[in-house]
Length: 256
Image (cartoon, rainbow, N blue to C red; front, side):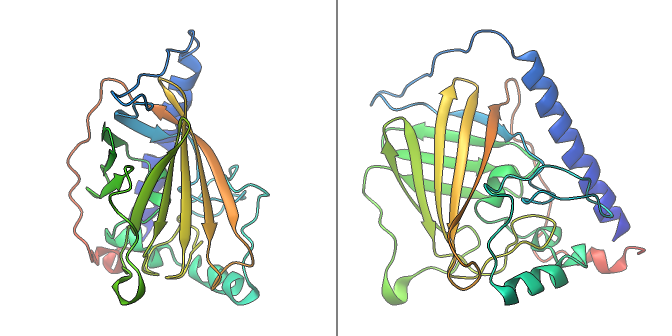
């Protein structure tokens, strides 16, 4: 258990420090937004979130394995129902409960702010997200050719079902069809299979995206709530191989 926590702290801290250093070094005049042949902002390239949200999406003090930090939740606190807040408190007592610690897909929006980069491949009517951890893929049609399944065909998946459209220069992605197996961070923040996420990717310039995600889950939260953070382009890098097998159980053998 300790090995897992230490490894996560080191990787998360290194990623955040790299992002902060890159941000300070990038003080030149912003480059104009590149566009695809249909005039939409071209998100193609490698990206990394600039946030400590992987530890805890809320503002938080330091606990074992998690450094103190600023969260990404607008209003600071997730509006949990009473029973759900009690469950979150119980979940966070043991980091081995984290599905990501067992190499499961991270879900949405957590996939956006894992400490590993992700790549966008884009063409008119289509945006594809490729995540280094753990080789997750999301295919988002923006031309109206795909709609959410309805009725008995509703999906129950790790990454949900994504439907996109453009609101001016902002990519909006509507996601549902989740299972209830993923967390939002290492601190036990969670959701049910009724989660509905609306993401907004707004390109500020060629190297920066302002990201927002509004989460609605009537089983767990008292109202919809929103997280917000910046994402930065990662020049001169590629997605690397990531060896992590779903259902990994080595944590039970670590020295606590």
